[in-house]
Amino acid sequence: MIVYTRDDTVKLSGALKRNEWQTIKAAARVLMKEHPEGILIDAGELTSVTEEGARTFLAATKDIEAVGARILVCNLSKPALDVLNQVPGVRSQLAFSLSVDEARQSLRAAEACGALPQDGAVLVPLLPCLDAALAVRVAAATAETRPVGVLGFLVVPRDLPIGAPLPDQEVELKAALSKAAAQALRLGVACGTSIERVREIRDGLVTALSEHRASSAVLAWSPEGGAIDEFIALTNYLMYKASCEVVVARSAIGVDMIDALAASGGLE
Image 1: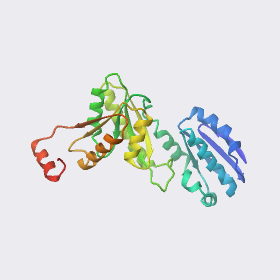
Image 2: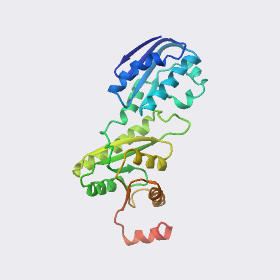
Image 3: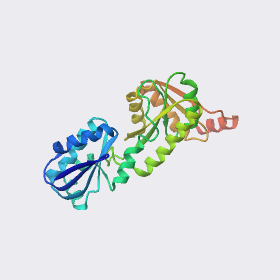
């Protein structure tokens, strides 16, 4: 087997007959210094893969994800995929992509809008039940000298590896993050962003707030936003679980809306 690198990609050529990760590892670590978000393995030139050779990808995944990065395997042939699917753990842990371009776009999505402050930031989560524009305004007004950040969430189905590409969702989320960051800049506040890959929103949000050492999280709701019962459930959950301050905001509403919410059970 021949191994060579280019940009963010390790390319494999020839027959993969045994676990070659130790051979590939040195080259991969060099790439990781320039691409800490993750790297690609292009397997398009492999002529054959044995079950023992398939363990190369499993070892690579464990090593790369251990340092907080992602690894995506591209261009696997149908026979190679069939072999990999027979190896315990490979199908559930290894993130595949059909093409190098698709995989690269997935890796780059997380870095598109600027780095998220890692300590003491006021964080705004982007979720369907929340009003992002209102939350950004509140965050900007209350941040004082603290940095502001916006969290976007990709919910990865449990039958896929956590690093699996989700192209459509990634494009949509990147656009939403860019919009929120641009709003913060218009308000005179520098803003970083982060894409969090989670299995479930509420636990994923709590974990993200802790890992980023947030000083506070801002949740906002308006009648034009999501369902108020989802907003209340999320707020209650964070009140018990979040390790940081939780700031709750609601846009101004008229008497008619108050009566409607009370009638529907949205207000106690």
